[in-house]
Every structure is written in structure tokens, then in C-alpha cells.
Amino acid sequence: MNFSIRNTFAEKAKLFELAVFPSFCKICRALLESPAEKVLCRACLDKITPHRAPFCPSCGRFFEGVGEPHLCSACLNEAPPFSMHRSFARYRGGLKDTLLLFKYRRYRVLGLNLAEIVSEALKKEDGLWWDVDVIVPVPLHRRRRWERGFNQAEVLARELGRIRRIPVETRALKKVKNVPPQTSLEHADRKSNVRDAYRMDKADRIRGKVVLLVDDVYTTGSTLRECAAVLKKAGVKDVRAVTVAQA
Ligand SMILES: [Zn+2]
Ligand SMILES: [Zn+2]
Image (cartoon, rainbow, N blue to C red):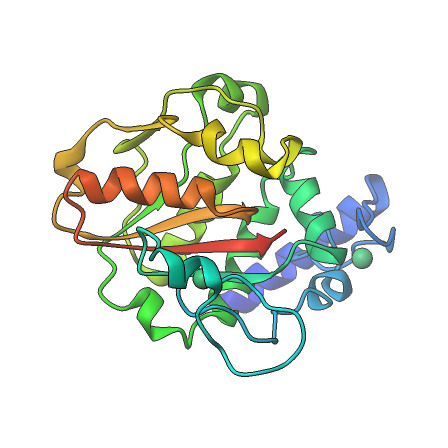
């Protein structure tokens, strides 16, 4: 079937769907008219824009205001176990709404939109993608994964892997402690919360490789630090990390 015929078919199918089961953008309630619009309308997706202000080149923490990029005090004090981390934008506005719909309302298809947005915005960050052998999503404890039906970081990792043509490894790193979500804890409790929460299962799959860790939200950084430390201990050559949003 050639492309234009397939397109016409998709348009007809969409018209039928609109007439029988109209669907609306879950943020602005506009009618979803294009076959490409699944949960959110194009206008709402286009409003999600990358962070522009300076950030720490090592841990990726965003700074307030303007100025040159510089190492943050935490990285000056102690270099993180990953060589670099980049977040797409702050966890607020339309991006926060989209992540909440993706994660808690289980609109898994939004993982594709988010991965596309992140990949496009960070495509010039050569140090992040260069030579990456494998993408590893931050794992969920199997009980939480079962409750949610999917691991949001894994969905993002698979979409990023498909876009950037990098293999994804989901079995090497395991979460062995079912701890409360980071966002529900006070700052001081977050670091101890993730201690010993992750474990290597199949270290031979990633030994000597350059790994890109993927997660949805970066809060204090303790999850990425803990995962990166476990990976480094298992013989990974270099760990980098990417997250969609930074709280
Ligand atoms: Zn909308
Ligand atoms: Zn830093």
C-alpha cells in the first residue's frame, strides 16, 4: 500500500472514530482531530519547551536566573558517580500535567511524545549520546510495576532507544527494596530511602559498556546516584543519565 492511500485510510478511520467516539485533549479539552493526536492535542504538546537557563554541566541541576554554566556546590564537593546528567525541563506546567497523565492515568502512549520531545531538545548534547552502548531505565520494584502496569522509565527508555537506535537493557539492574516514592519524603530521608534499593542482576550484560540511565523525574538526584554507583561497581565503563523533568 503506498503512503497516500494509507494516509487517506487513516483519515477516513479518524473521521469515523470522531463521529462515533470523539476524544478530547486531556489538558485543554479541545477535540482531537488529527490521527496523530492520541491523548493531547498538538497545541498542548507544542507548549512543552526545553529549559533554557544555566545548569550544572555535571549533575545537570538547573540554576535560577541567568549566568554561565558552572559546577554546583554539590558536584564541587563530591563528583557524582555518573559523568553527566541532562533534564529536558522543569517539572511544572504542561510537562508536569503530561507526566502525571503518563504515569498515574496510564496513558502509556505519551511515552512516545515525551521521548521525541526529549531526544529532539537534547540532540546537540554530544557528550550525552556519544558512544552509548546501551540504555538502562531506572527500574521499578516489581510490586509497583505490577500495580501501575508498566515502568514509565522503561517506556521512555524503549522509545528513546528506538529513536536513537541504541539497544535497551531492562534486566541488568533491579530494584529490590519497595520504598516510598521520593516525592513523598522529606529531603533528608531521600538519600537513606534509596540506599541498597538497587542491585545488579546480570552484570555481564553491561560490563565494560557506556550506559545511559533513563528516568522520568529528577528530584534530589539520589536515585540516579544510587543506580549509577551500582552500575559502576558492576564494571560499567561510563554512566550518563537523562531525565524528562527536574523537580
Ligand atoms: Zn490540548
Ligand atoms: Zn552539579
